[in-house]
Image (tube, rainbow, N blue to C red; front, side):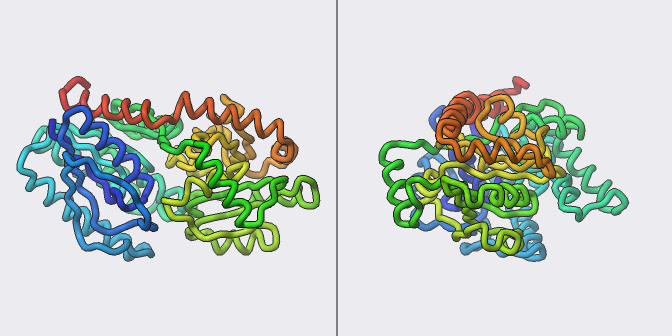
Length: 400
């Protein structure tokens, strides 16, 4: 079958959405299908050292010019509009009508292309949600109920969700928001990770610790990735201050970039340590070099996104300190599995077990094992990518 897949990023661009789309295209090719990826020619982050080998049967239509996408909302909006126009034209020019279209959510509302094809040409489509708009704009505080754009953007979201033959959510909290907003068939397929803590990677991670001057007896708590507006660091600071002067020494290390980095540097001055973002080719050893991973989410972002940092930590059998709401997907997964500690915003009492646990090697080991078990149940690439491919085939064959 001919399957069109629409997302702004695809390897060698190292955006997480492009990574999972790459995995899906490979699975579709192995099943004998002919995927066409409609993506941008511009990069994301660092593509240096990328070893991705694209399946020969995948047709890739790269829109626009090479380089990297610009920062700033004005520039992003121009990039989004250019991609919308290019993707719509590219889908209209396909030599064969697709049997199904899969739209991710980068850029926002790109699922409207799938909705348009379903309405006017009867092509079924899957909306694969990585985050939700306009809910993200409301969580940012940029879209108030009285704003005249609110009913318009809400109507656009309902259109793409209602016309989708299936809508994929990353967690149960996101699924609940989607069902409430008019989506019909909602499937929960969590984000997956292909990382594995092989012996060679373990050795590389240990060498990296030594190169960074981290002692073998020190506990490294690592926040890696986007320091964006959906995330918070106040609980990490409170935890770090509780652990100051205690043994073993605990280092709170932040690696990455984002709009909150400068504020977090001021917040944690003298307490947090900061590193630049680590490119994709070196990220596995970098992530494995830590003993505990830090993940956070602002309460108002519950269900709007599910941080991809969490399944990555579980893939590497690293326990997690989660600064975020208990009712979120990550909060519920941690409560179910015991793979870390939940520190809800403003909950001073939750700091004590986290402070005690991260310092205790047997406790960390038990939670590491729980993280690995949770990964095997919930976040493996093989199982979740297979479920995604099954769903696409079901929609393409009209078996919804």
